[in-house]
Length: 193
Image 1 (tube, one colour):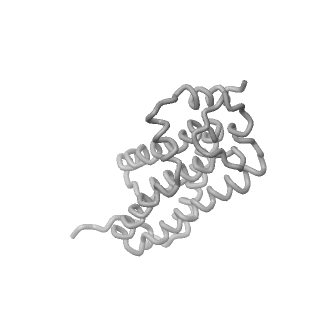
Image 2: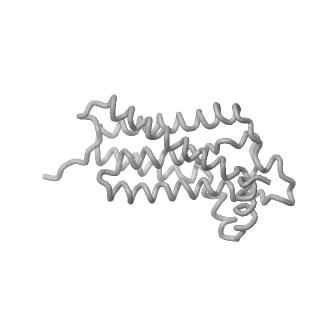
Image 3: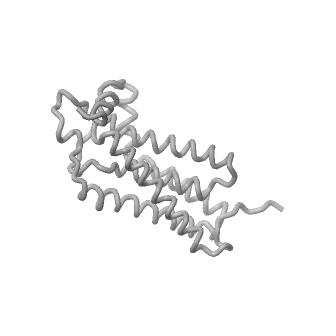
């Protein structure tokens, strides 16, 4: 048994609790996070007005890249079966529907770490704010990603690779945003008079 499988079993069966059984499946459902995304978009528009539009476009580009590269490029290329497809029922706690796709990389991890990274880069000015927002957003992305292992649909390596991929793609998109957005359109807080 590989280290990846050992860690999978440790998280999937060793962490079993009623609280995680209730929270982990909820965390991974995309529609539960729509209100958060809307609040962030509204905040950006209210605070930065029209200058928020290129930043919101960068966030959407980041999401598009992370999702397509994870789901449509890497998964078919690697063809790693999900743990819930290859492990016997006695060896796994499957807490959600297994899904028909491949496992590597976790699109949840790729998408959420990409979002956490680009959001931190766009909104956090200064080291202390970047550390605070980065810590909160990466904790959020990590919780969603780790829930993929807990519910039995991804191996730990899938989420680590997804987190790295999402972060790299977000940094690339942020570089594109900084390079191609006119300086007058870059988001900066409005100055109080």
